[in-house]
Length: 334
Image 1 (cartoon, rainbow, N blue to C red):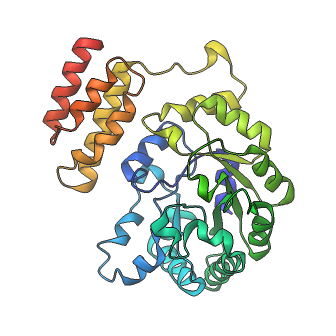
Image 2 (image 1 turned 30 degrees about the horizontal axis):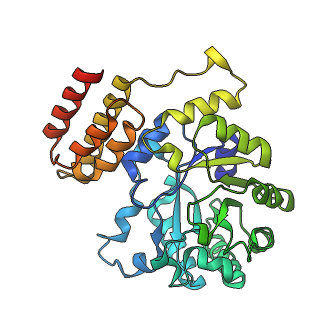
């Protein structure tokens, strides 16, 4: 299966992040060494009702640089999830190696509909989704595609069920499971529990991917060592920092000290920011620089006078505005 080979070839994955991990972002991180990239989560119900393919289907667009990739779907109706998995497989053909099921999103508007991490409280439905998707894809000759799931530690500290939940998904036909070491009610606060990831890894025969607190190359290495996970999934650690992937790969290859890639200087950061902005505008086919404001802020995080740079981002609306801001910033601090 191509998914498993991709995982073995490069175990440093780029997480599905709604509102962040669009195609230009994924393409840049792939260039810097990310393994499989996962799309922003896509609603199965949204795809079903998007008859003209001009809304939810736009989230299925992949950059050439990231192919093959993984599409993440969310929903809680097994039949509909299977139906849309088949539709996505037909639509994207060999551009994808798998379909991931979001069982970890803690956002209230998702959870209140029974989707995302609400499935952690409904393991029977979660397993039925995996089984239906696996059977559906197999029936149309797409047994080459992986069916995976991203889960959490549990609903709360009083309802930690990741091990039992993951075992059920494996029995239902999941190819791999990603475990985020926080509960739903933690959202992204506190520390990710590496022990629960290690426990899931010990309990399963299929690959287990660690998620949570992968903020640096050193942290990625430590998490993989402590959990024995087959791969690490990087989310917020990739904000304005695609260099994390090449550095993590170097550490995993046994490199240390001066043999590691150098951290980017301010000029490198701003050069890539400018390229990222151009890619974003080209991708969406309109002046879309406003979408780059948060990314621009991440690129300069920790740099001199970053607060001033971020404050001025609110006033930019064109590429020319961004060019002026970058030039002035480099003149003073570069």
